[in-house]
Amino acid sequence: MAVTRQPPDVPIEKLLRDLTPQVLGTVVRRFRDFAAAEDAVQEASLAAAMQWPREGPPANPRAWLTRVAFRRMADHIRSESARRRRESEVAQAAALPPASTVIEAAPPEDDTLVLLFMCCHPALTPASAIALTLRAVGGLTTAEIAHAFLVPEATMAQRISRAKQSIRDSGIPFQLPAAEEKSQRLRSVLHVLYLIFNEGYASSVGPRLRRPDLSHEAMRLARIVHALQPEDTEVAGLLALMLLTDARRLARTGAGGELVPLTQQDRTLWDGEQIAEGVALISATLPKGSIGPYQLQAAIAAVHDEAARADDTDWPQILALYELLRRMSDNPMVTLNHAIAAAMVHGPTKGLELLDALGADARLRDHFRLDAVRAHLLELTGDHTAAVRHYRAAAGKTGSLPERNYLLTQAAQLSSKLRPGNEEP
Image 1 (cartoon, one colour):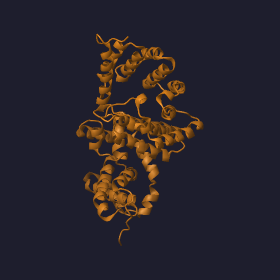
Image 2 (cartoon, helix red, strand yellow):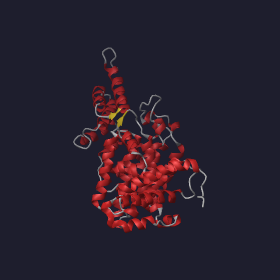
Image 3 (cartoon, rainbow, N blue to C red):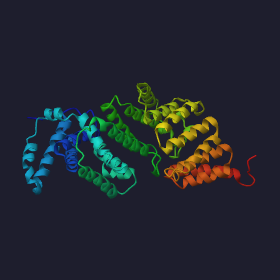
């Protein structure tokens, strides 16, 4: 009997990327072997990529991929002579249920969320969790992830392999955690997505300011989590934060890829639809109570985005929001941004006073942003000699070429005002 095909309304590449975490979740749940399951799903995806463009996607693409991956897993188990005791499982796996039964037994929503929980397990380091999430849930290749983080492909492959081994050794079950653990595990998922987005929006290393593939992937995954957990206010807050921040992406760089600071951006380039979606999301979330850090950061981003001009920014409101954020977060970056807001409300001297306390924080002492903010505030006070020194110090600490060029340009412009014969009045 011929297989019913569906019209290729969705590009096959996108269809496979969307289906990969759902199918992988189903296979891991069935066979309890993360590494082997991922190999099987990748083989099924490769078969689809070769066959579907010729014949068109089947009526139920997820069931097709699941059945092919199940067969690959059955072949894998049969080939393991040391696992003869599992022959009964092989026979069971070979007797595949109808496609509709596969779908009913394995809700894609549950499996995708469980897969995210597994990849972002607290037992893994943030670097390993990011790599594994992008590989298993995002569907990026090892080469793509390595390129994004500017490391050799072999290094990234080892990182992902160690993460899979850690999951295997820890005995993490493929299931949703108990209610008391679920909130903590969900926070780990959100933290990993937040880190992925930040690296994409403001790359810490390399010649480009942005890695849109990473930031867009983080937003896609955040939408999935929000669809699965619509009542969680911090999930909504994180998605709103991403939308409101990413809305400025086109205005952040000039024609040559140079950094354009927020106050100098052409706001007509901001994405109005994303801003409207983000504002609506956070506006609906904040009144629900249980306000968390992501919601507050989204509210701050909304205040920035709703200002038609930089001079219209409601800095007192932003300062008040940072005051709340500082009370619930021991993040030195929050304290740094609070100092900037305080400087905008009370003057640069107040901001510099607040920065002095951060100099003793080992987490931020060698970060380029501390010097960069200090340089900007010193420039506002008129102390250009000290500002130049800190702009140059900041440039020496960042691995981002656009950031470094911007900081050195600021230093050069101030230095020109200090040369003999060109002193400031």
